[in-house]
Image (cartoon, rainbow, N blue to C red; front, top):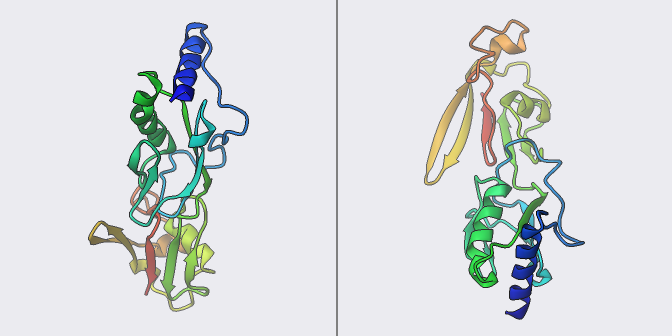
Length: 203
């Protein structure tokens, strides 16, 4: 508890001096390699660092249910949230341990291994892929080697699990893959972006 109080005092003094505290040496870096707007997925590996207390530095994986446990904070829901959202929640939950002074928390995605998608059906190399970035259905086809000769790219189905339900999303890529895209093909719904866990079915 003494360390918590000292850390809180250091943060308060730094704020009064007009300088924001910086993570101590060894703290994880920023999420510089992640795409803008990245959301954490089950299976992602995280680095979590609480400034001023190395005992609360953790390397952990997000569980299949989208949560992780953290000392003094309990269970944190991470799936679908940005790293900065987790930082804010942990800082708030740990504030009471620092005599009301919210600690600075850094959450970095060490490895976005939870970003997995599957492509099945009439493609040259069906399988499960971990692109470590957000991809569109076009990108997914490229990862799977492209559609086969008799693939019906005008009726591609994307299966997305949302809780206990499975959502079906349609993608019509005939015109686009022939080099003659329509306005609808190029619109926001023409080439759907994929989320972690999506399955692309090419009939």
